[in-house]
Image (cartoon, rainbow, N blue to C red; front, side, top):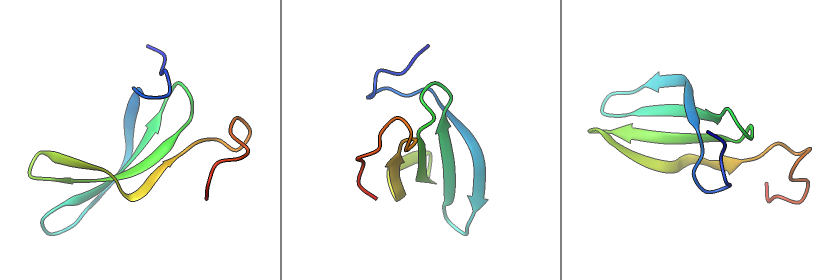
Length: 64
């Protein structure tokens, strides 16, 4: 499956467990984008800790 810029093939690569929630670093295996979400009570808050960032080589004008 390849991502189309909206639906990404995300893989959790790091999880930091906290008291009531967890911070999850997810990486798109197709385009290389990275996002840090918050998971709590089987719900995900996308981009809670860091919005999705793309490789600079492919997207040189993205906001930092």
